[in-house]
Length: 84
Image 1 (cartoon, one colour):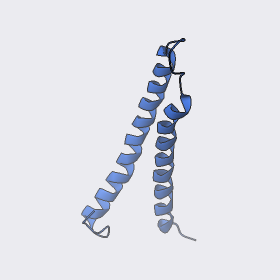
Image 2 (image 1 turned 30 degrees about the vertical axis):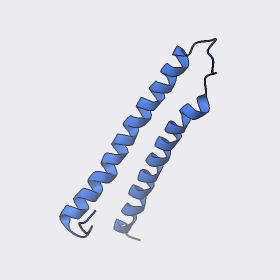
Image 3 (image 1 turned 30 degrees about the horizontal axis):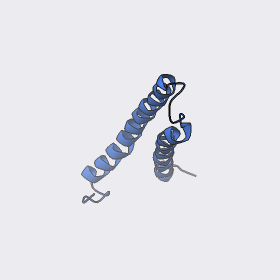
Image 4 (image 1 turned 60 degrees about the vertical axis):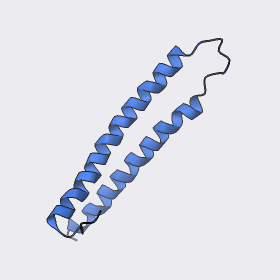
């Protein structure tokens, strides 16, 4: 955050946060998907409140959105090395 991305240490931290965040959000996606499946299977049939899949799916949506943003940042950063 305080290191400029032009230095070697700043560029290393930037790429670590970029690729590390991609791995972390991939793990969150797997965890949230399994949690939704477990909640849906364990929800009682005659409960006071019905199962709400929309609120459960918001976390999966946000994980996919974060993964998309990270991939877009990776692809936009690699365009400078190409020759025409």
